[in-house]
Length: 50
Image (tube, rainbow, N blue to C red; front, side):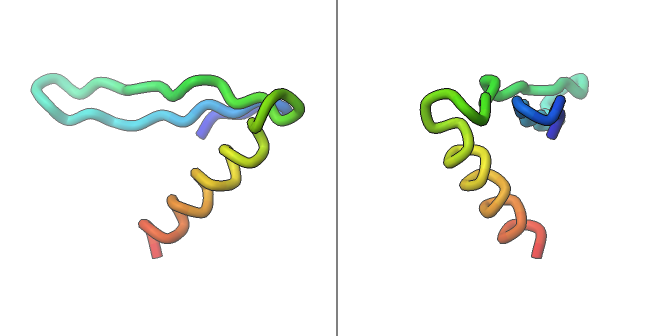
């Protein structure tokens, strides 16, 4: 996760062939459903890691 405090981007390491990173769209907290989507992703990540 990369953030500047108001927007978030999630990175995923792709290990197919040469390692590369995939990047999510930018989620901005006070636009559309940015906060809800960011919280859903963080919740899914905590479930996957736990």
